[in-house]
Length: 320
Image 1 (cartoon, rainbow, N blue to C red):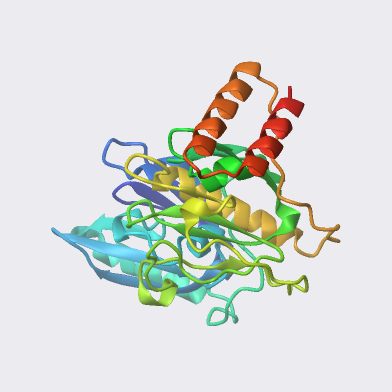
Image 2: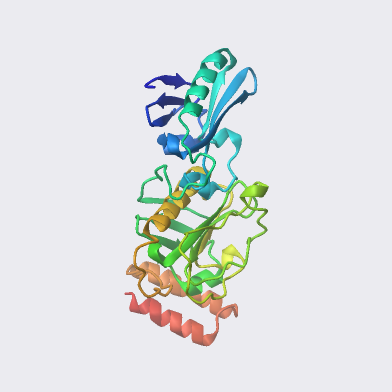
């Protein structure tokens, strides 16, 4: 088509095989849109196209992605508010006829599998490296590994005893994201061989039931023995928890989408023997001293046994 349709907070550019969505950087533009900047959506990634009345003299053109086509939508699991939906283009009501024309043009270009779930991601995920600050630690992702570095002011005693964590994506089978705008939000990795007991921290229903936690796993079966897993995210070393001002949507959701895409992409690669959850190397003497001091507080409070205290202290000293 080669045309451009400018709406409120976004512009859609129509090509012969895709739609390029460019988001504005205005002060009223949701920060998620500003973080994404632009997204190219192949026609093959779309399931349907709708045009409906909007609020205050507007109409809404929406392209509906196929299930499994977009890692961002899969990671969001139905938790995004309408105003943060990257597939909605809001237009003045006076442009309804023009919007209907483009809606018809897009419908004519939907593929024969539009009603079927996509077998692979067709929309690119946000690019690594990326990081964000959660309530109990800092999460980082370089494209191959996810790392959690705990904050002594927010991390639970279980996470401090486990130490900082590093997870190769080849050792993962999924990821969960519960919006920080919901109660007890978190980002939680699902390592291979670990059993997920269900929604944690009071999570609601999954994608079909509105806001809640979606378990997003790779298609490859996990043949390793299933081990127990902490029920609560604040006790799970494979999770970081959100809170007021921590893990905002525009940082944590693209992070979850990038991790999910990498897990899916590498799921067919040969998987080596599972790597144990080990603490990341720490060589800063002041940092080591701080961690030992906090460990001592946990020991004096009876949250860490004598043997656990001695073993963890030796491990920390070995990192110097």
